[in-house]
Length: 160
Ligand code: THU
Image (cartoon, rainbow, N blue to C red; front, side, top):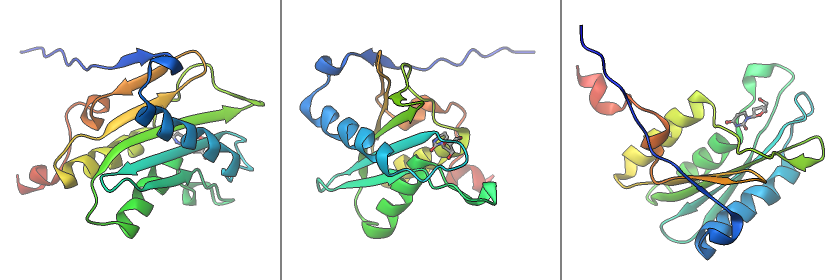
């Protein structure tokens, strides 16, 4: 038997410690929470994906009466980016959550399916995608989507 300990790395920042480029996407993710369609959960999630060409694609969660038919904010942004700018790497992704009249104190943790899609996006373009998770108290920054998901499953794994 062998035991492996998997480690990952993230950093915690205060708003005024972020760069202007980081603040730009986080501010848009926060704005986007206002457009979330979440009549069932009342949990508003906003996302902003910055592309290598400078364009910022906006996303927010889209719920549905048939619950599994809805989609998380991160995936609306990443899929829209892939559909509109298939050749443009996504370099940065920010997420913010708003509920009960305020942004969450702690950063929202992306669900597993969104992490998998983030990883595919990063892998597809062959560069790192920085991920910023906004919370009122602190902002978590991951240099790479891979830091959010150890033991990745990507196209190479399909080859056996
Ligand atoms: N949600 C997201 O948009 N992103 C996540 O990573 C986690 C959850 C949404 C899905 C649903 O509309 C609401 O938050 C409550 O789960």
